[in-house]
Length: 100
Image (cartoon, rainbow, N blue to C red):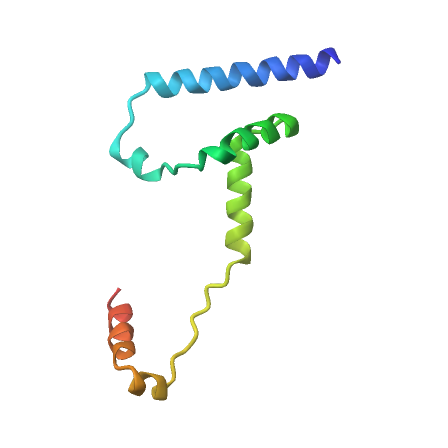
């Protein structure tokens, strides 16, 4: 029981330290671009879950993102000539993608 209490206090201390360093250190434009906003409805639930699992919200979110990226399909569906003839904008779309 005392060990769990020590971990809880340590986690709270780390959170406070992290929050304080965010207020103290200035942010630059690059950091602002990398930041994402989480829906406030889920933030408290994520914090509770992180505390129970003795981890951080960041670790949970990174894990979820990794799972999503691993399961997402990025294969492009080839467009047939008939589809392009029926919709000439598909030709234009293909040209634009080649230039990128």
